Amino acid sequence: MGLDNNDDLDSLVGKSLGQFRIVERIGAGGMATVFKAYQPTLDRYVAVKVLPAYHAQDPIFVKRFTQEARSVAKLQHANIVPIHEFGEQDGITYIVMEYVEGGTLKDRLKQRALTVPEAVDFVIQAAEGLGCAHSHGIIHRDVKPANMLLRKDGHLLLSDFGIAKILEGTTNLTRVGTGIGTPQYMSPEQGTGQPVDRRSDIYSLGIVLFHALTGRVPFNAESPLTITVKHLNDPLPVEYLRQVGVPQPIEQVLLKMTAKAPADRYQTTDALIEALTRALTAAQLTLPRWRTGLQPVGSPASPADQLGVYPGAGPFANSGVGLGRISQPLTPGSQSMIPNAKPPMVTVPCFRCGAANQSDRLFCTSCGYELSDKWAAYDHYKAPNGRPILARLSLQNGYMAGRSYLFHQVVTTIGRTNGNDLIISGRTVSRRHARLWFEGGRWYLADVNSANGTLINNLRLQPNQAVPLNDGDIINFGDETAVFNIVY
Image: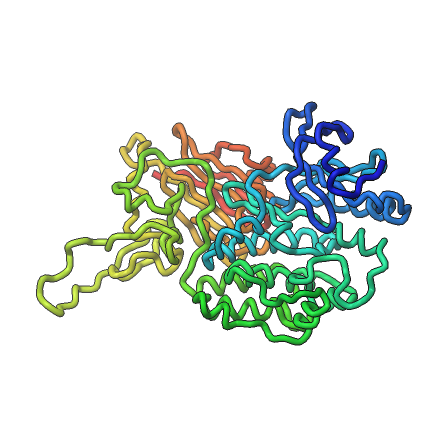
């Protein structure tokens, strides 16, 4: 029955592809049309992507589609849209995937350019997903905001892996600027029909970051050919970055991401994520808080205190423009009344890591924890000796071996990058890896869809499964080992 034009595609509404009943058309692009569909067997909505009908008549396409779809369906990562099914019916080739209600990054960018932390947060999430695909030998080839789906909590998922590769293999497009993909985001080598690898995806991701920061793509023109030539020859227009106040460390990372020669770019997404994290730190910015959905009992003392605060907010909740609450001095009112007199300098121990800090600092210079220790107010459960029941994690290996950290009875996020309450810098630790919290008199741990898993005493946790902890448990965050202890 093959469907090509808009009217034919709209006729799918109300009909079924396999077990999926088409509800409405929700998007369209050069490569596919997307429908919202209902799957009655599991009582859920899904997204069904229908590819151009004329491809289904090409046996080479059908073979490549099946091979590539199977490969992509095996990708399991928190930042990749899971594929539920794929198939062909009545000349219609389709892919079924998770339905994401929050729209795309393209939709978000139509509203406004993003703050630096927001933009870097989305790019790091995309890089995490790309890293998983690259490790399986899969190159995306069409990295752009329209292929980045956003859940309502800000979680990003990459879609359309491999579709460009399938179509390129069945379409005679060899002239400059006519390759399958989106010219505004394509690397120079992809735009000129050269072989591509993961560094091409990194270039495209750099263009996405530029767009997110400035509200525009760096190179545009009336024809794809002209756009490709600009990618080949024109320097990145950094003046647009400077007009909106993008910090120099972020600009430097962006310049390397979008270097003309692949050898001059970041060679892996891990290297890119590390560079972005360092650049944020150098710019004294932090990533937006990860919304865990769990709230501590009670609330901060004042409405101003609540601004931008999420459960377990500690080490990095207050840095950056508009990211966190405004902290009060450690000892308000302790300033000397004598004009120009300097207050005496004393040291204050950090609750979390025990390091000594000068009393004029708001955050620990070793671990970033807020020295005023406001979260002590949430320690409602007491031991028989009258002291609060706290938790301690003692790192056993890696860069942080020998360090110990204490935790109050609030939600603590654990991961590799800035924006978590506890940062464990091991390469096998995911950007958002796990969360630790206290509830009903017990400590609990949950994995939050980490790539390499969280283990307790060598047993791997299921994602988002709350597991009670016992004193002396051995916890693995990826390859990083920690001993859990209850302290009071």
